[in-house]
Image 1 (cartoon, one colour):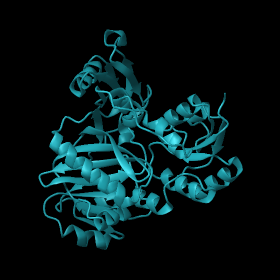
Image 2: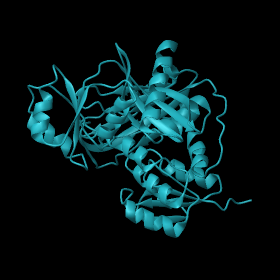
Image 3: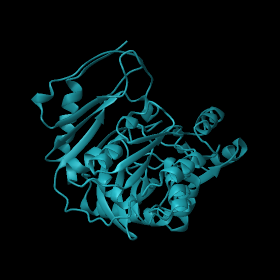
Image 4: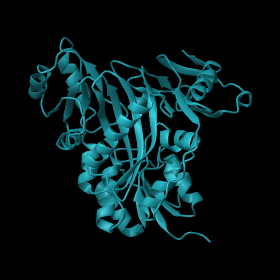
Length: 395
């Protein structure tokens, strides 16, 4: 029998497509909202609303007319505020407006984590260039500058005081909707993310994900693998820090994606999002490695339904992004996927003829490979073999 419940999904871009498709598989009526009338997710939704995901008033007006039974977003930060506002007005299952602000404004996030004694780096919230210069004086060696309310590594720079600080300030600030930036201690160590689901105030660790980045100065993520290969003791400490972060920002239900660096002084929080992890972590890697469908779980939570996580299976999954050089994408020759059945997807986000820029943010990446294996190491190797077998011409 067809489900008559309605779910409203904030965003219809490529990141939201798995949620829209999963909701349709569950028999739900799906209303998707996005400012782009050509958004990919609109192809699969029952009702399409052309409104910016950040236009809270416009989204509220649409929600009043649609009257959904649940509202959610998948892997985007700022729409979390829109979800909270709709949930608050319509009495739906959602995190509070305060929690949404804590999870999307890095200054408020740092303050909330600090109040809760959650381990974090030294930081300053900056509102002007003069404040910026003063704060820089308090750091020795390298430090991180990032916009207060952006995502996808946009505007994040590793800085030292002998660099052109005015240019760096303007660059980072240009990605901040509020105009505020964050300066914080540069943390050295192994970086991971933690995927969690919180139900009735209890936070379950679904996966700890190892991360590969470009390193300094932009730290763009170029790969992820599940499960983490860190020691049990390290993973236990990371889990404690992640649960503390979830509690600090006020997440009472639903997913969280917490980025953590395991420093010589223990795990410290980089950021936390009140949403599912992006980069195909929760939509692809988690179910491949653990058998847990986090997207379905979160749809059920948004609808006010009770969930019970299944027992995790033991396996490995990985994603690796194609390396690239600046130029124009001229041609792509893909390998025969039948030669390796563990290759799940090969996707290019740039088209033939597109300009390829230096990799300074996640938007500059040209494509990726997703693979599974009996272990994360085997999954990574499967990805790397597929990348080496793909011929890419950039002129």
